[in-house]
Image 1 (cartoon, rainbow, N blue to C red):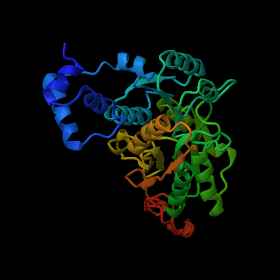
Image 2: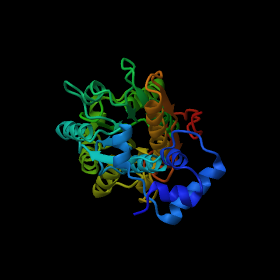
Image 3: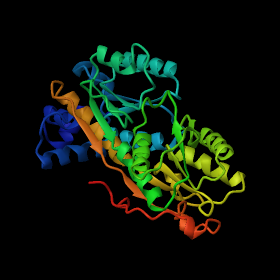
Length: 360
């Protein structure tokens, strides 16, 4: 078995220098660091992180709790976090709460018992008492709340957020700019989101244009494909004259698209569809989905950076990072003027919109 002493001998450095390279906790001359890494690779040396964790009182493990691994968005964020964690020398323990608070609480028990160095929470399930956040705080475990659709200003915690309200606003502006006025909306119900800021932003854009969505223009799902399908069926039964629909996330939008197809309605000739997230499937379905893109890779990377900074500087002030969104226009939307069955003379005047530019 190759030891740290063997690596030191091969690289012609001290054991302490090898230890500093492995731990990454002190600066090492770049040339020496490369020599040590080359020796480690040549000898196939693998650090014993468990033993090292016991000595240093850290485990080199990060806990990650996501609400639904069947949703490609969360799966892509999890991969970005795993990649960033691996690059920093940390193993990531992935826990899928499956939209269940009971599972979420159970996984918190597991992570606390494993003595993980920190936890990243992705949109935690709607809390009871004590909440997931409160439980982790009580154990003084560093953590980051990532991609929450709701800022928690009353809590002194690190957060990596996305400007989802602005994303909803851009989506609303876009549809209004295409002259849509008979618009439906598929939102989300608890346990994932308490107050959906993207829907707030969407309604604000429509309200500014004088379009007020009545209650029958809304349907709700739980974020999954089948709930999007069912919600779209419900909307079509209530309002057969819809020309557009905005959907809370891409996964439900895929369900909505298939429900529209099943009803014999054509996209975009009869109805336009806008999603939210920009998961991989949104660009390859037919027709490709217009969507509000979230910076998925950045959510993962910055979450890990924030957590590692908290580990190194426990007393630093909490930081909230807010990431921008971008509208990606694809084949699922066209102007109402393009609909052959609606006379152009009946269309309202177009509204100016700068929706296609990324937010700065």
